[in-house]
Length: 274
Image 1 (tube, rainbow, N blue to C red):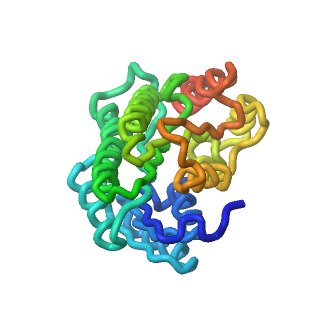
Image 2 (image 1 turned 90 degrees about the vertical axis):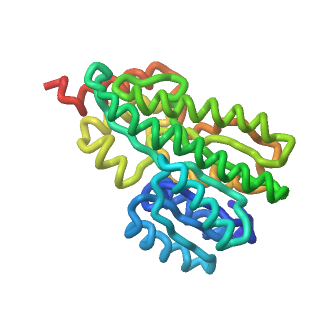
């Protein structure tokens, strides 16, 4: 679909890159010529992912990073610039989430999710953005969010609130930096079929069936369908797009099926249906 050298000469940072969408995004970038700095808290997973990406002939570095710590994020961007000479692409993919009725939330749980999702994305945008602005040759920041950033979702108040904040951040920086050559966009995946989602979101056939009913296309998305958006936004193909959200959810967020699905999931996962 894309030219194999689409990102040749570019340097990208991907957070939460050890598994799932983050790993798939890094692999897609590597396949299209980008050098990579992979960041996550679990260095062992990162190193395994890096070996797979190096097979495509690009340079790949790994770094243990807690995105909720500003100093870690500053070091992450600095490491990319020192290793590869610049930073051209940042994918803010690190996340934290859990399903729990809001009346059972604790300040600790609330803060943990917001620190990683909202604050972590902010730190990444600011540090990468400053470096890109100083380089004066443009750059692309991609924030991973979710459609419940604007629909809301029962049982997911911390994550929905954090993702809504990242959405506002994306739009604000997208406008602020548009004339300076740094683009900031977001991808909002729906239900993407990964080993992690099978284990955490639809561990039984009954839950899987109910969740699929909420998706107008009648199927879960694939990692390739998300990484194709990532490649588009990371490259010059999307040179006129900034402050935008690209949704890949099979139409799920457009109907009442979204609320029905989240209510079903919240009930099953918290044991209220027993």
